[in-house]
Length: 474
Ligand SMILES: *Cc1c(COP(=O)(O)O)cnc(C)c1O
Ligand code: SF4
Image (cartoon, rainbow, N blue to C red):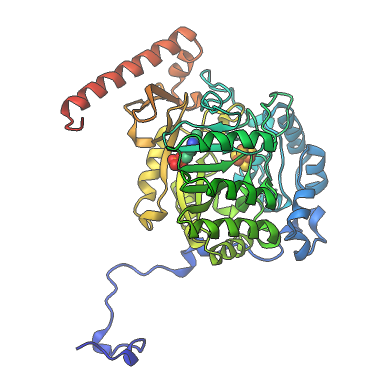
């Protein structure tokens, strides 16, 4: 007979002692639940006197963001030696991306060891650690512009489109894939203009309306955090009113770099919430996609911000970029995934780092992604387990990392195909400095490069022929 309800919750009798087949886990090792809390920012000389209300004010964060080395020095002062500061000055001068770091991020960097800090590596360039770009790198390696029928609207996949609404972000990341457009011109790169002109938006809306097969819109940028509340409503409602549009994602790095906006910019959160709620009534999904890369980016402030979003019934998914010296170990990625899950954020993708100018020091090999993916799968819920993808240079779109047709680990060339996206082969290249010295030498010669590429493509062709002979799929 079933136990009466009233006995449930009572300690069982000694005879029914629970058998623990798995070894017990020491709760102090459950690091994903231990979030940085308190007034951590007061370690930074410039923020010593900043109170909590000020630090949580998103407008204060935006106004006090660091955009040049002078402002950085004014904030961190004697926490860094002069030699590091000189390295930063030289790094800024060579950076293809604009620089913008929020006081929140700045406070999370370990300035006692800035060279190895995973957040410093993502946001603050230092000249001494830069590596030469891969010889096969081009700006806009993803062909976002080539696949854009309207400036800032990329229609690559059959049923979805990427809408770049504007070209600014709450922070600027060194590794930005859209360094061809995002941020202001730098000494190294003159940007394509994607200003938030509503005239451009009208053309994008018209295109989406004229293509009944498009059902899924990624609203990105730049960054949706930069859209004003009324622009969130305008874009959200215009898209919801199109019968073909079934899904909208607002993409923003904001929760990872300035979570306080979700606490103090009530107007913005209300605007998003009403689009989500209207969508729900229309049986359309409206969600937030964000971009955390390292567990240190998730603090007690983040949890509070995301708890508020969860209470409003807004689904949040995360896309990370795999980066050398940031999150390219099994332990770090497992902790990130568990910490995101703790905040009810679904880890969706981990991108193998795109071929981007000026950040070769941040790229990993494809093999690194394969190894980490294998170790992450099995540690938590399947729906909290990210898929590791390569956004295939040349417009092949996202391919699952282990779905290559061929991977030559010696030359570092992997070959992908994307039968439902675009014909042909798409190549990804491991960073040259990770390869054997004799292969590094081959990459110095244009002729040898072509030979290695031709060999890899021929091998992929053979592999495809072999597998299609064996396959029953037609
Ligand atoms: C990533 C991306 C999308 C969305 O792809 P999902 O795999 O559905 O997340 C849509 N369009 C473009 C151009 C993209 O790069
Ligand atoms: S927030 Fe996104 S779009 Fe903006 S700089 Fe960073 S990676 Fe690029």
